[in-house]
Length: 387
Image (cartoon, rainbow, N blue to C red; front, top):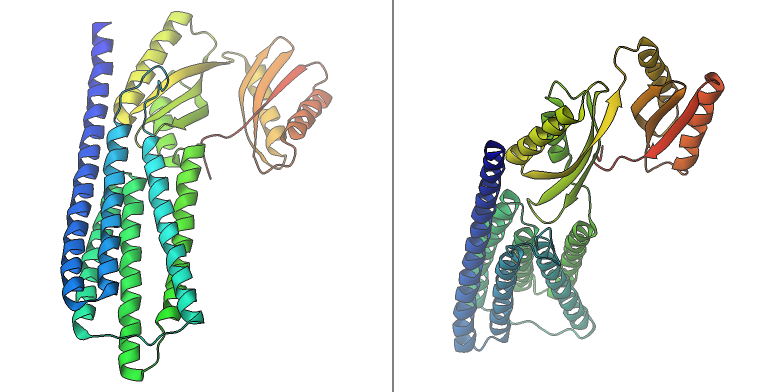
């Protein structure tokens, strides 16, 4: 028991260390974002006041708002670190998704505000005034924003942080807006044609589109979308590597925040295995999966497989062919024959219009072919793979 407990504790320590390193990386990136935006805000404020440029002064205020985005990232990460409690036994990891949703809302709001301002300038056009110094300042800030955006997005993808990814996209959108200002200014200087409000409207629509996409991703994560197929496949491969396991089915995984996954599954074993052997097998699988993949298997169900029964094996093969001949049927598993009683589960694709009807039809078809059998077919679903 001490050895088993030690294995579990070692795995938990490694997972906690990985999460701690990840969170430190997120906080560090957030601090870099705050520092860069505060620097840009002070720089623009000084230049804006000295040149009496309202545009640059207002852009300084925008950088303070961007610094607020980095603060949201850091606060969300810190809150997600809170230990599980009675109300939240699986932890607080999903807070990161909420902070990502807030950042997406900020991007969407910025896009809408820019679009409204652009339309107002189209309806009530005014002759713009451009001078070299403000444009040079904006150009420098664009380069800083592009670097910050790409860096933040890259780190976000590396550590699986949707909040950082959204923060990076926010910075890149700001760079895009400023770039459009420079392009419009150059066009006006050389052609005396003012395209700033029209170009601003187009850029604003792109920002709105990005904000909607960011929001939809985070909302989907909060609602509870599929865990990645890579995690599912890796866990199943580990479980199937045990010689006692003939198949892995009904894998269901729940995402409680980045790198916080719980799950359950069924394994098929010989019907000759006794309870003590099954219990030992389940414990070994649970420890192995947690140590290798950081996934906590909260339950492992058992399907018994007919052994030494050629009739059952042949019947299983025939009934599987019958089931798979139907459209939308993905798999038959959990097959077991005892006397004249046969039972099995049928996975029917979610795309099927009436999944229960397909399952019932297969059960009747099997009974028509083998009238001596009492057929028990259970409808199942694919909760793990998106392919």
